[in-house]
Length: 122
Image: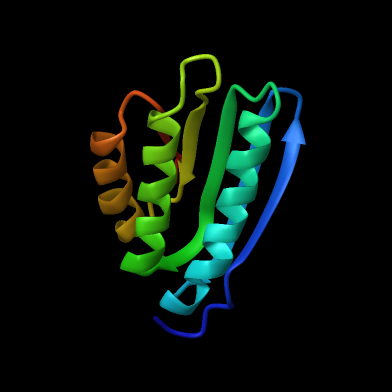
């Protein structure tokens, strides 16, 4: 995929909203790092009054199928939560990355009741 930097994933909180920001390239070797970041977000979200997690992937240049599966697993876990703990996941995407359009539409179809997609305008 070129010379994109390695994956970085950071989290922050703003009231009842958590933010997960992913940058770089999520190659197969980054799967564990991505899974750990998402596990941390999920644990904090269900242990607090989190209503929404914003997953900002606008700076994610590429994600391998194994890393996309981490997102699928996360959404499955959110869907399985009891209503009081369930939170919404909002993916902020970059329309210039065609893989994001394809992958996020599949994620939305899979977990539509807990997922929203926001594409930044070009």
